[in-house]
Image 1 (cartoon, rainbow, N blue to C red):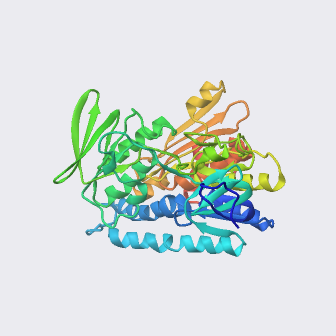
Image 2 (cartoon, helix red, strand yellow):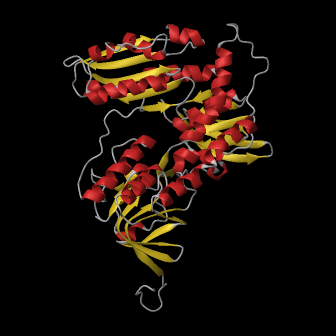
Image 3 (cartoon, one colour):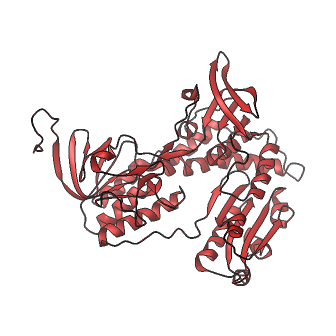
Length: 463
C-alpha cells in the first residue's frame, strides 16, 4: 500500500511493521538481531555494505591473518645465528592476500544465512530515517517499534590539501601488491599495526604523528619501548610532526610535513589514513527521527537508549558510550541493547576489565587503569615493573624487547591494571583481565600453577 503522504511529495511503498529494525550488519547489529529474533520478534536488518562489519571484513580478522606472514618473517630474523638460516625467506603478498580472502570471502553470505535461518529479514541498501518510527530503504518505507543503530565507524575526515590521495584501512587490506614506500598518517592502532606488517614484507615505512607520543591510551614506558623496537625494524617514526599537504608527482606522492617549524618532504608511493575514526552516521537523516548525536556517535543513556527518541537504541562504534571502539565491546553492547528492548529494562553494560591489544610485533597490551590514572585517583598503589626481555620465554624466541607493569592496590592487594609488551602477551593479558573482573588479589593469582614452560608461567613472576 502507499503511505499517506500529501500530493506532490515522494510516495513510498510501506512494508509491514517490525518489532525491531537494525541498521548495520556488523557484530553489534547481528548480535542484537539474532537475540531478538530468537525471542519471537519480527526483525529486519539492513546494510549498504556486505554483511559482516568492519572487524570480520575490513579490520581485526583480515589484519591478523596478514600479520601472520610478518610474524613468521620476524621470528626467523630473531633466530638468525641461533639455528635458523633465513635463506631468502620472504612474504609472497599475493598468496598471503589469497589466504586472507579464503576467510573474508565467505563471511557475508555465512552471516546472512545465519540471520535468515533465525527468521531475520535481510535487506541490502542505504537506510535513512523518514520519521521517529520509520525508515526508508531504496523507496520502501519500513516501520518499527524499535530501531538499533549499529553502523560502526569510518575514517575521520581530513582537511589538508591532497587528502584525497590517501587510502584508508579498507583499501590497505585489499592491496594486491605492496609498493616500495608507504607513509602512514596518524600514530594509532592502524598505522602501527599495518607498518609492522608492511615492513616485514620489505616496504620502507614511515609513521607520522602530530602528537609527541603515539598510542596515548597505553602505558608511556611501554610505548617508548615499542617505538624503539619499531625503529629497529626499519620503520621511521616521526613524532610532533604535522602533515600539511600531499602532492602527486611523476614518481609517486610527496608528503609535506612541519616539525617544530621546519618543513620537509617525505617521498611515498602510497599514503595511508591512520588518523582516527568517527561514528558512521552520514546519510541516516537522524534529524527526521529526532535522534541526537555528536562526534562520538548517537547520544545514548547508560542503557543504550537514545536520549531524544525512546524508540531508538545504538551500540558499538556508532554509539556515544564509555566503551572502547573494540569488537568485544560492540558484541556485549548489542546483547545489552537487545535485552533492554526485549524486557523493557535499563541494564547498563559492564565495561570493567576489557583488554585491548595493538597487534604490532611484539604486541602491546592494556587492561584496567594506567599508572597516572591510579595516582590521580588518590589510590595507594604498588607498581610492579619488570623488564622481561631476558626471561626464558623471550630468550627462547630471541626477542629482546619485552616488559610488564602491573598496578596493585596496596590496601586490598587487588590488581587494578596490567600493561604488557612482548610476544604472546596478547593471550596473557586475558588472565589479568579476568583477575580484575573477579576482583582477585595478586596473592590469589600467584597461587595459580601454570603449565611450564609457557608464557602463562611468567605471570607469577610479573607479580
